[in-house]
Length: 135
Image (cartoon, rainbow, N blue to C red; front, side, top):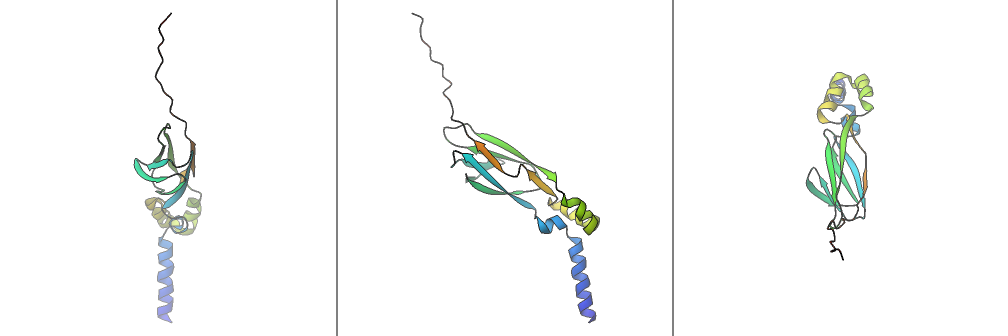
């Protein structure tokens, strides 16, 4: 019986030492990325990932730049920025400063915004000027 109580106490203490957002949301966020036209290359922080439509998994802890490129079209970039989520207040109440500290250090307390990326790509135009001689 003593061992059971000790085990329950240890497990309970371990749960309190982890952050609520770390458990519930995780340290990464899935961001849907789409483009019109589809089939464009998705680069995250300069690294090629997939083609649209795509779902990219990004760290919640830092900003990211998503660039969408397709041959014959102007590229578009969107910056995703972390902002503190609403779970932080509840975490401080339920998990104390230790739980909040875990969520802060792992980045789980953040949500990336915008939560999805959808861009329209516009065809490149020929910037050459036609010269006609005066008649």
